[in-house]
Each structure stands twice: as C-alpha cells, then as structure tokens.
Amino acid sequence: MSSTIQTVNPATGRVIREFETLSDQQLDQLVEQSHQAFLDWKERSFDDRAELVRRVGELLVEHRDRLARLMTEEMGKPISQGPGEIDLCKAICDYSAENAAGVLADEARALEGGRALVTYQPMGVIFGIQPWNFPFYQVIRYAIANIMAGNTVLLKHAPNVWGCAEALADIFREAGFPEHVFSVLFIADEQASRVTAHKRVRGVTFTGSAATGRKVAAAAGEHLKKSVLELGSNDAFLVLEDADIEKAVNACVMGRNYNNGQTCVAAKRFVVVDAVYEQFRDAFVEKMKQATFGDPMHEDTALGPIARKDLRDNLHEQVKESIANGAVCTVGGELPDTDGFFYPATVLEEVKPGMPAYDGELFGPVAALIRASDEEDAIAIANDSVYGLGGGIFSEDEARAVKLVRDHFDTGMVSVNGYYIAQPNLPFGGVKDSGYGREHGGFGMREFVNVKSLMIAQ
Ligand SMILES: NC(=O)c1ccc[n+]([C@@H]2O[C@H](COP(=O)([O-])OP(=O)(O)OC[C@H]3O[C@@H](n4cnc5c(N)ncnc54)[C@H](O)[C@@H]3O)[C@@H](O)[C@H]2O)c1
Image 1: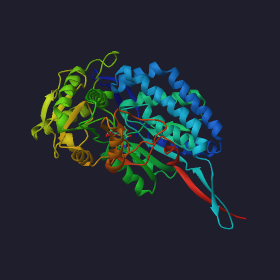
Image 2: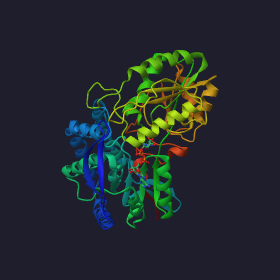
Image 3: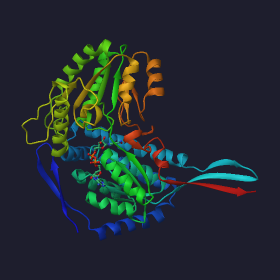
Image 4: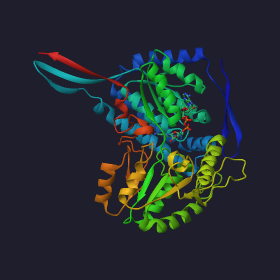
C-alpha cells in the first residue's frame, strides 16, 4: 500500500510538496529492473561509463543555482553554501571517471607453475540509504563510485529531501544514462528492509545515525549482504598550548557551524589545554555570538534552520540535559520563538562525561568546550568516545601534531591546523560506532566488487 510524504520548508514550517510512496509491488519491479540494467551495464567499458559520469558532473554545474535553492528550501542549507556542494559533486564525478579504470584494473600476481590475476568484478544492484544533510553529495559519493565499478544503484533518500532525489534522477536521465542504472525509490523507512532482503540486491550502503545504522546492518546481516556504514560522530578538535589561537578559532567556528552544524565530521567537542583555555574560549565565544541565524535564502546568512522540527527539539533537549548535569551555557541555549526550526549558536562549557554534549552527537550549532591539562590528557579525552569519524588538532609544531594524531587519535580522518571536509581523492569513513568501510579515494569503488583470483596454469 502506498502513502504520502510531505516535504516541509524548515525556515517557515510550511509544506512544500507531497510525494506518493511506492507500493511493495512497484518496489519489487524497480529492483528487478535495476538487475536487468546491471546485466548490460557491467559489460560497458570504463570509457563508456566515464563519459556518462562526466556528463552528470557537467549537468550538476549547469543546474547549480537551481539545485542550491532546492537544498535550501528542503533542508535549510544557507544558500551561499549550496554551490560548493554541487562543485564537490562535479569533482567526485571527474575523479571517479578519471581513476576507475586504474583502481579496478586486473593485477598480476606470482603463481608457482603459472600466473595469477586479481580482478574486480561488479556485484550487481547496490542499495543506498542516505541522509538529508548534504542531499546531493551523499548520493553522488556512493552512486558514482558504484556506477563506475559496473554496479547499478538504488537510492532511498531521506524523506525531507525527495525533491533533491527527483532532481538527481532527472540529471542522470538528461546525461543519457540507460534506464534503471540509477533509480530513486520513493519508499517509507519501513520498506527499506524489503529492498535489502530482495534476492537481486547484493549490497547495502548506509549513511546516517548510528541508531539506524545498527538496524540496517542487522537487516543486511540477516541476508548475508555486505554493508558499508557511514555513521555519526562527536568529533574532537584539540587546541594545544602552541596553537595559533586566531587560526584555531576561525577553523573551529567554521567547522562547528558549517551546514547549520549538521555535518557528520563537524567539529563538535573542543578540547583545549589549560594554558590557552581562556584565550581560546574568549575568542571562540565572541565569534559564535556573531553567527546569527536568519533566512537561509539570503546570501549573508551564517546559520539557517535545523532541517526538521523533531531534530531541532531533540537538540534542545540534549542542551538542556547537559546543562541540568552541570554544563555552563555561555552563549545561546534558548529556543527561539520562530515559525521555522531555528536554533542559536550555542557554547557549553564544563562539559563532562555523562552529558549528551560529551557522549552523544549534537547535530546543530552547539559547541562543547572541555578543558585538558596537557597533550596526553587532551588526546585521552578525544578518544573517550564511542565514535571515531574525524577530528582535528591545532599546534604550530606540525611534526608534534602529526605524530600525535597519526599514532594516537582513534578516528578515520584528522585535520591538522585547519578544517577539511570530504576530498574526492582521500578515503572517507570512521571507526568504532562511526561505522565501517570507506568512500572516496578509490576505496569506495572497491567496496562492492567481487575480488576474484584467477590461477592460470602454464
Ligand atoms: N559518516 C558519514 O559519512 C555521515 C555523513 C552524513 C551524515 N551522517 C550522520 O547522519 C546522521 C544524520 O542523518 P539522519 O538524521 O537523516 O539519520 P537517520 O539515521 O535518521 O536517517 C538516515 C536515513 O535512514 C533512513 N531510515 C530511518 N529509519 C530507517 C530504518 N528503520 N530502516 C532503513 N532506513 C531508515 C532515513 O529515512 C534516511 O534516509 C548524523 O548522525 C550524521 O552524523 C554521517
């Protein structure tokens, strides 16, 4: 049975559109069509695939302004940040088109009495479940890698950004892709396990919260399907006594507030050594105060709304619970009286284990400041988390900073003396409750392939 889902503008609280979900029968048919498309797609050369992928990148850029507005309307991203997301998508298309043939080329190996080859064969239909926070980037990063590998792709996007999902389907069509190589499934969350269980689906890639990731991985495990999980985090950024404080503050505020604070690799906990704590705190608080919220359609708006009302209300509960347990709110922390789902830039000090601001993930512009006695204490606090996605460090002694994070920081990615997000040529992913598997940097193209050894007697 189908139902309807509404998209809502988080800046106004008003309904944008209604979408009808697919029935189970329609869903099964689309999965089968994806498999049929795979039988042809896997035979295409890398050059053929690359040509279409490059065209997707070009079209994304041609439609950049419209796509940026769509994101802002559906999930509240400040309009000034939308074009950057689209340009990143183009860069991923170009990188994948350029490198897939090399990443997935046969590799010769030694074999006694013969010769051997390691080959990378596409697996088939890959099911992606994606979140709303980067509506185009999240899809492009798994879809393009798999399409270049010769797989076909199904997308279940977060229901609040189905306009973006529809726009992507249009772009793949306009680029000239054969039907069903990339298919959008407008389905309810409850229907996702039906897709995972479908005999034609060979793998599941999920980006979202750890709570949902557990359910998705369990459903995949039940059917012995491979899964990749890109989950949340509570990334720590360390500020050592020899840091350039101005540089650190600028990067940390940007890293906290970018995308309205709703980034998996956002800077969320700031672990500052005693010697520079007050200096960092005062400058950080001043800069957070300047980050006011407003209409995300305005070019100069720093903070738009939180993407959904329930997420905004949950964020406020996490802030209140942290304060009830002893955190001190220096800036923000009050729920504004607005129709949209806004939340002010907020700074919490005296953040300790047992508080949501320390243990959980605060998905919004709320910074947790934590005092550390020294470098050793700082890295211990940073690692004292169930999560391990990204993080950062500030120290003017680059060799010291690199050694510390390389050998002791328990995360998949670390920024040194700056704040970086995703790079098409670098692996992206986490450890612990932040998930497993890697995207980008060629690694994403090898997640859903059959690594096949050929042993040829001579
Ligand atoms: N590691 C990464 O690369 C990365 C990137 C972006 C976001 N994230 C994380 O995503 C989270 C925010 O996204 P969210 O709030 O949309 O996450 P979410 O887990 O609520 O939803 C993610 C997706 O799963 C779907 N979903 C929800 N329940 C489901 C179920 N029972 N079965 C199958 N699918 C289901 C949603 O509709 C959505 O499409 C944060 O934790 C953030 O850190 C991680």
